[in-house]
Amino acid sequence: MTSTLPPPERAGLARARISARTLRTDRWWVAPLLTTLGLTAFLVYGLARALQQDHYWAADHGYLTPFYSPCIAAQCAPEAAHFGRLPFEFPWWLPYAAISLPFLLLFRFTCYYYRKAYYRSIWQAPTACAVREPHRRYTGESRFPMIGQNLHRYFFYIALVISVVNTYDAVLALFHGERGGFGIGLGNLVLLGNVVLLWCYTLSCHSCRHVFGGRINSFGRSPVRYWLWTQITRLNTRHMTFAWITLGTLVVTDLYVALVASGTVSDPRIFN
Image 1: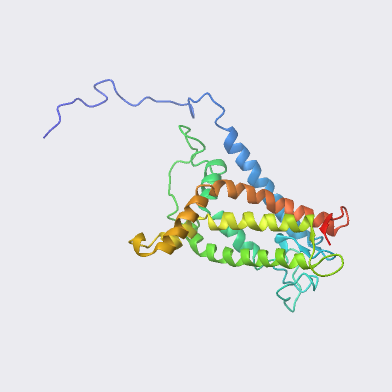
Image 2: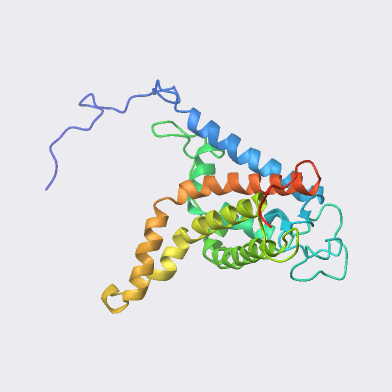
């Protein structure tokens, strides 16, 4: 059936030509700005600490910062190299934890939440609702290098292994009491708290949720996996929160270990 309605131009309904980037009057730019500043601050701090290659190991208490774990370079302190050292020294520009840091950064870079964060704030695609983006066309994640975002599911498995390594580091530090044996200091609580929150972030990942429930045709036939999927789903609703909290706890943990290792502060002991 042929429509008898007149074309929009003839009916006076032509699209309005608006030269302004947006007609919004609220401070829509605040959230993207804060996101950019937060991500930039973490990257600058992390890069500086990774290249510093010092004050990463508090020998008296067995505290190893997660920025240097696992410490595998030949320059690493022998006690800090929980999984052994390579037989050669790294150049000054290569972090001691070169085996883990790239994968951790890629895991976060390809994370569904972080994509949203830096797409909107840094890449401005789009910056905010009803705000015109500065790009002429949209190609999505169908071309190099953005097609690499699809590797996130594989980085998730590596992040799981690194989370186990960080947990091992935190537990091992409990057996470095002042008199030998088991002991607890403020640094132990900092390390353990950071590990717990890192697990919350890792397990709340969308890829983790898919692993447990993405290919099940009937939850009724898989009650255990269904229960695990529901628990992960609860965490998943707070994935953005954990993404930001863990950026903060990583910095706090690393800074605390650096201050103790350098002798700037002493570690208060709670037990032994």
